[in-house]
Image 1 (cartoon, one colour):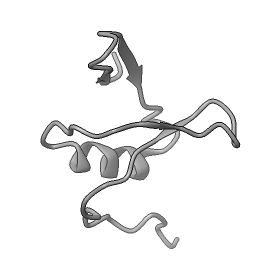
Image 2: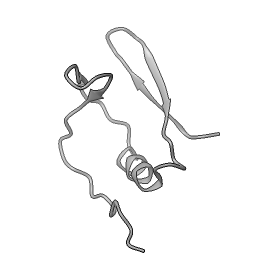
Image 3: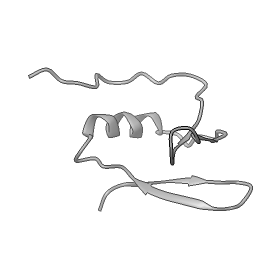
Length: 71
């Protein structure tokens, strides 16, 4: 079973459960899980101009691994 994460909306009590496509994007997913080693509390914004997405500003940028590997 794929690993899942939750986004909890405090005001409504709604919980969003999602999983990442780790086999399709392993490096991106590894960066995601490392960045979420500790739970985050952030304000989410709707990306109304670009479709069904949410985004959140971060206080600091986590160190990321290289996104591409050269053959």
